[in-house]
Image (cartoon, rainbow, N blue to C red; front, side):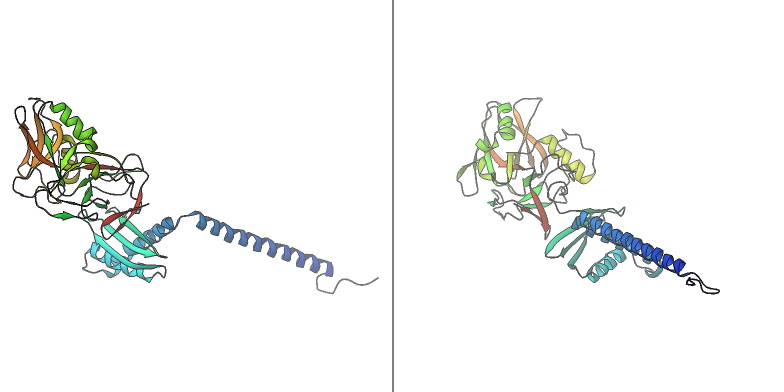
Length: 340
């Protein structure tokens, strides 16, 4: 019989079994490692590009928070963060054309391109990072939106283009996709004649039948209000009400005006168009309840009303456009571009 055991050694059978066990363990390890790599790939592919970019920005910010206390010395933290964030983003091969701007609330707006697509993120003062690409849900009050209607102001004769002629008039930053993005003309593109017969009818026309109202533009021509509605982008068109105007002012300037307040408005952002034009004014879609005979209108002196029971008046109007809720867009050079 053959001798299968060496002196002071292991049997050949034990050696073979050991090798087999090791091979099995190696195979299991490789399989588990491969599955781990596959799981990581699946996880990465399940994230959108936007989510991955946001994650990169958040990691950079976390690193900046630590490095600030080590190397910043006397530099202001916001200035340091802007500088380092730009440097670190530019170090990434897939990111180009980085621009960082600070807004009035000390938030940072970051615009850059990645793989031939533009992105914008906003960093709030609490460190939260938000994507600002979609038009619905992320535009803020006062933003300019490129709406394809151009016009000449009936008072100043200033020409407004699609890029600077329309601004967001929502109640602050919209959340989610519930509701419309509302925009208002930057200037005053037309005048409308109040007949003074039944002011409730007049207000109803301003708020619900604006498209049918006969208006007059800067060259003296008569048009219909429907000229300011682009069928592709707009669902509805009205004018501004007194309560809406005061509410917007409260959101924009953190004030607590009563919704029926008629006093002068603050307008450092130029949203209410309070320029001192000669005979400057525009209608608001609100009746003077105490008299039932006067409509409110806006001047550079504040909010006033006029009794039209025995007279007529042709004053300016500023159309308010309800954009279609399914629209998307992106921010370029501080103007929202609507994407078809």
